[in-house]
Amino acid sequence: MTNSYVKPLISIIIVTYNASKYIERCLKSILALNLDSKQLIIIDGKSTDNTLEILKTYQRDIDVLISEPDLGIYDAMNKALRYIEGRWVYFMGADDQLLASFNQLIPYLQKEDSIYHGNCVTDHKKLGGFYTPYFLTKDIICHQSILYPAIVFKKYQYQPIYPVLADYVLNMQCWGDPSLKKEYVPIDIAYYALQGYSSYTTDYKLKKDKSSLIRKYLGWKIYLRYRFRKFKAYWKGNADTF
Image (cartoon, rainbow, N blue to C red; front, side, top):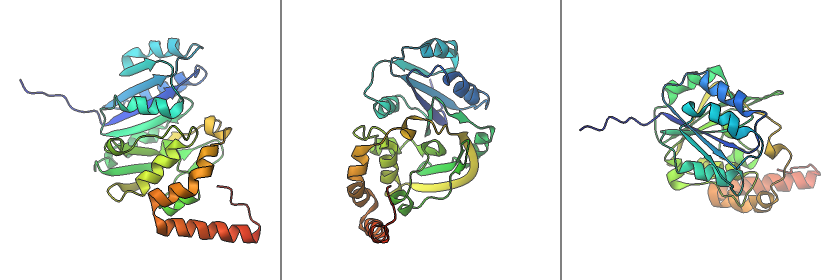
């Protein structure tokens, strides 16, 4: 008998913990798109509010639902990677929402060695654009703007030792990897909630290791440009905190 199983195009991963205030709005934004080929994975950290009750009302739309204690956001994301079947992988926060224009990105998903990224909108500004590896020495790429090909997670996973910005480290690995192509598509794909965990928590481990991570993943040329910029900022008395 011929195996007729076809992999879904996109695995959408949502990590939740006590997200009852937001999760239904997030799910409705996904389901409103009527995506023909998706896998929805939700990893819950054993919520103590009514998050699970809400999720169970959407159980027929959720392909994988696990609720158990974890060691933080990125530990939960790594757990989700065990279940991905999609050709591309997309991460959302429980307080984020997909926009109707997300569907416009779908036809671009062609090359399975390519990272596709668009724009995110917030209450105050738009996040997006074409990113070079050097950009990553200056700022963070909004995680919700990126669709990763599944092959990324055969090579890399999130490093939970960076409890707030492990996605930043992952993107340094990806943007420093010449085998992974990057394609920017100027489409607004998601609403990103600025009040999330990273908005009020500092990743001190990342701040300590940033220089060595740039050198390791982005190479010496970009590292030296970064150090020169920091040197100029120091002597001009300018803050260059990131």
